[in-house]
Image 1: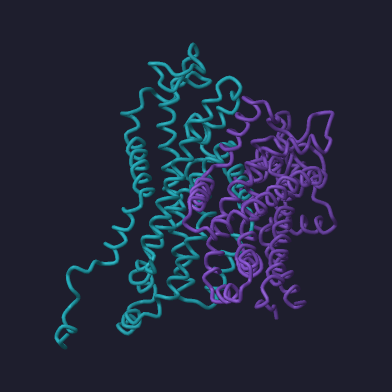
Image 2: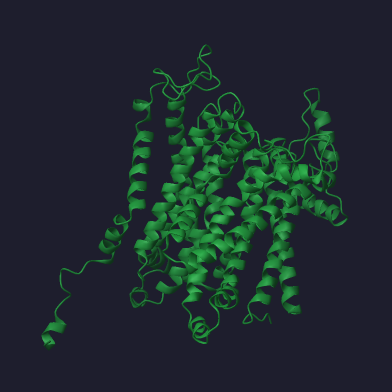
Length: 314
Length: 291
């Protein structure tokens, strides 16, 4: 177990290096190189001086090593767009994104897994057909359009919920944030839910066919216990694997959802950083998002080992 | 049953696997409806210059955000441009970008997956690591960065979408090739002295065509969603060229006056993606030899 954990950690670090290096090279190879605050009054000499200050006149590998060295000291650099430290910008935005994606994941799991089980147990019934069809539609919904439709219906026409933002200016009580959270969470969790329902259903159908489930039934174990304790425990293993695969999509989806609902998170920060070609912020976001995803993948792997008695990491 | 019966060739009535898949595909109502809808969309997209009632870029400052009328069936947008014409031309762009991106994704995915599956060894471990690595990170930020830095001309948009969506194809092809390369005819081709790359591209890869078609159909759906999300955010297809995604972005500013303008382009994206997904699903079921 320890060996496995260490190996995974090293692999994760290597992946992290690769991702940041690739992004760095990408930025440096852009036409004209990374731009710096373009002020029409700047003379070419000024631009050169600025480039020298930011180290942009050095070779790419040297720039990358310098960036890496700074990061290891906890310094992500200064945003070229707003002039604030990137670390601060991310510290402001990350909690909002974690709240939105965490809540969406929880809602999706809480709703989809029971529905998936029901669909599998009542296979080919009307409820199964409805769930299968609805989740198929859910998979094809573009989140940005779906989000807009939710805003138009619930915020513009019915006026039940706020159209965007994370809280009413001047307020910010828990209830206020929760009200602002409802629509974005519905928007973001729907496609996850759709995927989870389909997957849980097929995993459960596979397990319910197994001999040991028949044995449990034959022994006279109550149906509810057969489904929950015997079948679902096994079906949960592939579902957890799927959850791990869904995390990157969750984060990407969160970025789009945040833009639709003007939610002040990493996605919106990324969009504005990309607009401004603000490369220190882009690098910082790439790093933090990758770390978040790698950690969640590690958690999924460890969960996996805990759930499946056959998995023994050597 | 006599011995000669067993030696006779299979009865001519028995159908080829292709014919069986073909029939099973057309038995699915969802697939038939989807093919019809998409066929219609594609015809309209190709014939756009003849079908669209107006030039999609023609502005009319005296007739902005007007509702449906006899002249403008779906009304006009914030610049007085005809919404129906823009939807028709926008569909052209969205479908073309989707198709082109998927073609690119298949070229990359089938090549890498084929090489990994056929040669195994270190090539396989590098490709497999690359697939796993790329599937485990949110590529959305990578897309934004690339398009922001390199500009979002159509070729760059198509290339970046292809470069971030090839992994499922590669994974499928790799799996199939690993199984196919053990066949005896591969052995025979080797014995005849056929080059290894020729064997791979001429004799083995074509065997996985059905799976590639399934992956491609689902891939177009994905590519259309990615393109419209990027266009919605302002990093994809740039105005004045209409795409369903950037029309939605424009309409967003007027959700209080004319919310209906946000409904059309999004509904078309949804229907289009749904149709590709349902065709992909039906094809997968139809070509699955276990069924």
